[in-house]
Amino acid sequence: MSTGIMIRIEGLSFSYPDGTKALDDISLAIAEGSSTGIVGANGAGKSTLVNHLNGYYLPQAGRISIGNTLVNKKSLDQIHKLVGLLFQNPDDQLFTARLYDDIAFGPENFGMNKAAITTRVEEVLRELDLWELRDKAPSHLSQGEKRFAALATILVMNPEVIVMDEPTSDLDPSNRRKLINRVNGFNKTTITVSHDLDFIWDTCQRVCIMNKGRIAADGTAKEILGNRELLEANHLELPLRLQG
Ligand SMILES: Nc1ncnc2c1ncn2[C@@H]1O[C@H](COP(=O)(O)OP(=O)(O)OP(=O)(O)O)[C@@H](O)[C@H]1O
Ligand SMILES: [Mg+2]
Image 1 (cartoon, rainbow, N blue to C red):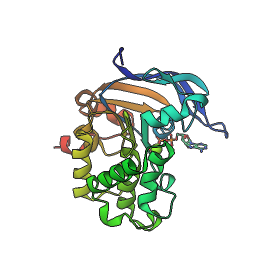
Image 2: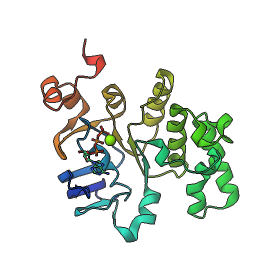
Image 3: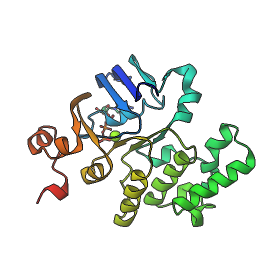
């Protein structure tokens, strides 16, 4: 992108049908190739925010652009190609009877040719150590396996922007470590929502704190995650490694 900005959010507000105001005038610019963590208490609006980035929710007020593309009903196909979103709940992402088919679904939908799909799906299955599970029903996978399976459905598309909502929940320590290494090797614009502040510390250059639908703080990972008073004021704690 000529501006170096990959994601531009301007004046974004969103309320759910029951009247809950989940996002209150959010503005944020995310640089191409950067890694940003979004942290905050339960109910702060993190998932609502990131679910806007691939058009799962459309702005009620304000606007979002990815590269030069405005997110709206008409641009959804293009946005889905640009942005891979890992939902907080992997069951929202896995819906066929066979893991292989879930991973092939995106490329098939975008009309990639058969041979290329097979090559790409097999590559991702191996990359994420899912090869042995390829014929299993996603609904029969363990929670941690589902998390990697859902990630595979995104990475198979090779998106410009990777958004992950609580990617470490249900991961054992060695898979959590594996994910840190993968994420640090992405070389893409990444946005990660997590309560695992050590994971954010290990994978993000920049961190935003959300509180009650607003951005309460925005700075380098060191500035934000090293600031005990700021974290506590937002119902968070220092990452374990900084607790001494
Ligand atoms: N479908 C919905 N209908 C009504 N209110 C909702 C809905 N989904 C979320 N909310 C409300 O919107 C607010 C923000 O929710 P959101 O899921 O974005 O929070 P979050 O920061 O992701 O929380 P968590 O850390 O628990 O995942 C909360 O007050 C929540 O109760
Ligand atoms: Mg959430």
